Length: 126
Image 1: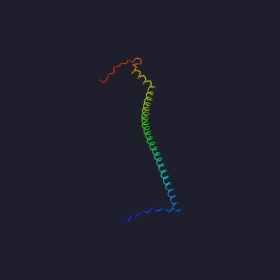
Image 2 (image 1 turned 90 degrees about the horizontal axis):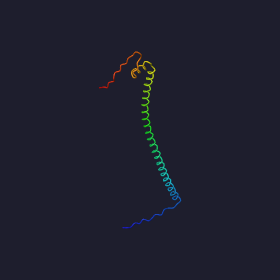
Image 3 (image 1 turned 30 degrees about the horizontal axis):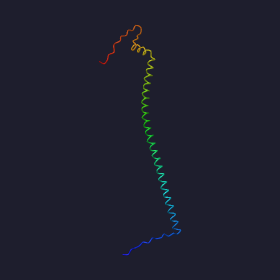
Image 4 (image 1 turned 135 degrees about the vertical axis):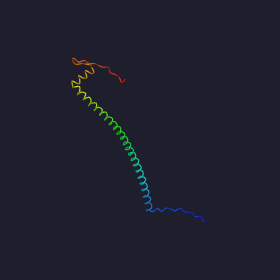
């Protein structure tokens, strides 16, 4: 068998080939730069997205807590309004002389002239 030798081919060094090699190197550098910029922008974008999502979650928790506190405060306000109504009714009754007299006779055992008060002991539920 015949041994086939491959002779190295010498590259042609013409101006066209050299300009094409320079153009290919420049395109490679541009592609590397583009890839680096895209990676940097992707990392920055991911960081901004993470920050925005974490802020959104944090604000959502704060809103939920504020709404829970708001509902509790509404209940307190309703209870205070109810108590205010009862107290206003009580004040109105305390301006009535007959009501005040009835309270004095019942609680303090005071009586009008000529009136006799009989008190009976309070019984427990037995």
